[in-house]
Length: 210
Image 1 (cartoon, helix red, strand yellow):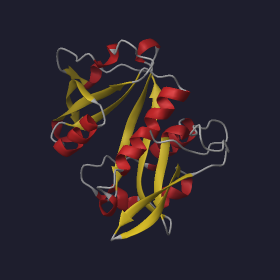
Image 2 (cartoon, helix red, strand yellow):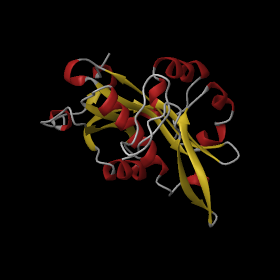
Image 3 (tube, helix red, strand yellow):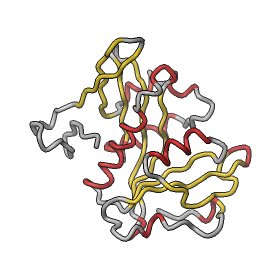
Image 4 (tube, one colour):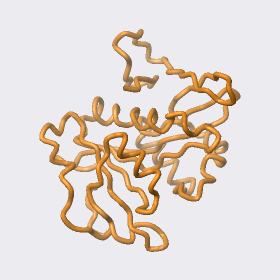
């Protein structure tokens, strides 16, 4: 389990580590045969000026500036960035918590890692962080995300992380491509009701969480 991070209001810490509200988890990543320290911390406004290279992948969904600012203001615990030495952004995850009743869940809005830093399990570490906040702090029932039906590498990665294809959302993406709603049950969902696959495809208009 990826355990972390400093937060002035809420902090998840490893039970064997000092419980400091300013603690930042640093990890060693290998690149070019050398080990470098990687910091995972909250995303901040300055990062918006430095993360364009991470979004160059054509499968990465990008948004306007006000969209990112809304997430920073409303769900700061769900917006984190991995930073290499020299303050170069390696990747980030952006999400939120939403829903009511047994639909209360964490949602991954965007996850991307720069090409130079892939194959280091960085996406897994960022996902684990969001899952931990959803599970331990917000007591969500599950975490979900949407992925293009054609994005086989991403689908396989999420499956390795314990996600299942819950349902297909017709024409969810631009170009009228279907999206797959993938879910992972958290500890509050003892009976795993949230990951019982839906029996039929739905349209985007049928999505309900707010």
